[in-house]
Length: 349
Figure 1: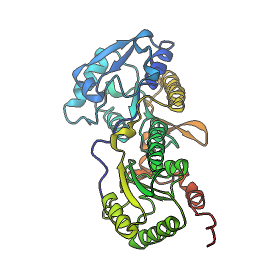
Figure 2: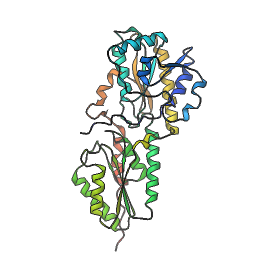
Figure 3: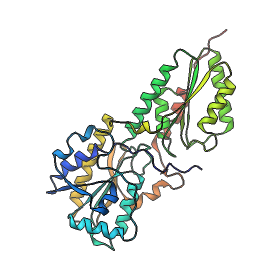
Figure 4: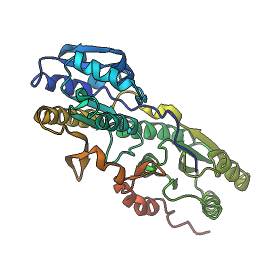
């Protein structure tokens, strides 16, 4: 099985920061921003942030504070503890993906050794793959989805004047959320998911359906493939197979969207959810800052409600082999995707 990419594109994290800073002014006299994650906390790359220092961030893509997947080890925990004490930090809001969750849990585990680490820690899910436990939607997934749909629509328009099949590869790691939802949204005939796997028989059936459709006047074919749908039947292999079997009937083009799925400016949905969740996180830290033992939780949307899950409970919700939640609500949409992809009645004669 192919491992997840070492450095997937980061989602837009900026929309969550203004809400955190501005709501935080109701609880603490000062709020600090840490550059480049735990590396910045170790090095003391910490700056005070006020109301106007985050002005305009809600509409920007990317992460003005920077990101890092660094996980501290050894004496680095002492350095972090010293920085927390020096800046009188009462709580931490960690905005990120699975690496951020691991960092937060690691700090919690070392709180007995270093008392300065015994402060509330809240993780806010931000991952375009939408593969984090404890939440049905992660910040950045909607922005990435909008980017995919916009680019696939452009590809479809380019094929209006010719008979062409597009095989579009999207990101997602071992989670097929982006592939399935973008397939539903763009009218894809077939979506290849890592949760379902792929066989040569499946590909033969898809070839037969493509040939039959183009023989009866179809002008466009669209296949959406998750990057980890299968380690052997790659996007190049699928394109070569369809091109060979299609002959003179239709052309085949591949489109690997790559890091363009990072999305640019965050979508309205992501801006709203980031603001909503960040405000809840800060309120939670303010309410639990004096409690013992200190809270270490992840916020998330579950059944349309905002819920908090203890970090120590998250591993049991994860499929450790594939690094995705064991239960994924969007998989229930697969039958709908198959129905929508069915060809209509073919003209006679």
